[in-house]
Image 1: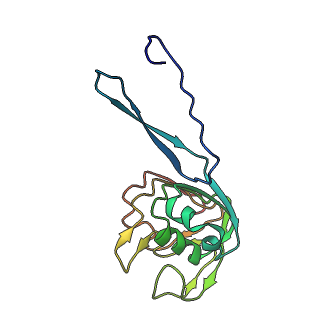
Image 2: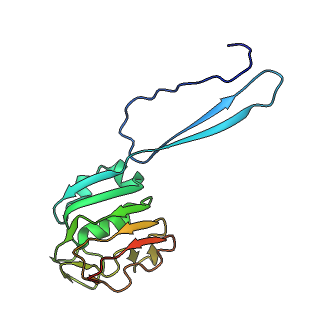
Image 3: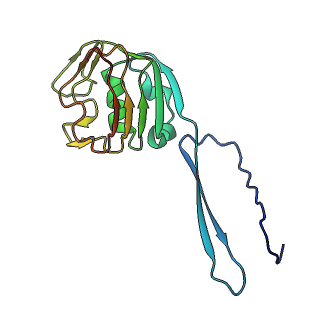
Length: 173
């Protein structure tokens, strides 16, 4: 209405886009003769869950998801290539749940460390979340649940993960 008092309710409707992180809107309330007020609204969306085979994380997510996901749940098998994808391509990732994932052995040059080509099963790879070539860690990562089958954490796996405040490590480690 053009004028009035009391409590009113506004309803906003959005199309069903494939946004996977946070949907944001800025609302400006203007009334002639008064200073405009701005309200920022953020709607956190459900986490993305992917079931992958080892080495398949990059193909399982779209380019938009890789660049914008904040919460990810991985099930299935994964290896050092998938950790490299997380570390190097998912800059906004804050929450990572690997509790139902199994880490497979990997032999090859596409892992997390340029001087290592052999990665063991059930081991969080060396430099999993720290790129030793750029000296950049996953500083946005806040919370992580490691796989229940994990037995070893590789050297420097969490170096420079300065934002990590919640880490769930299985008792076998």
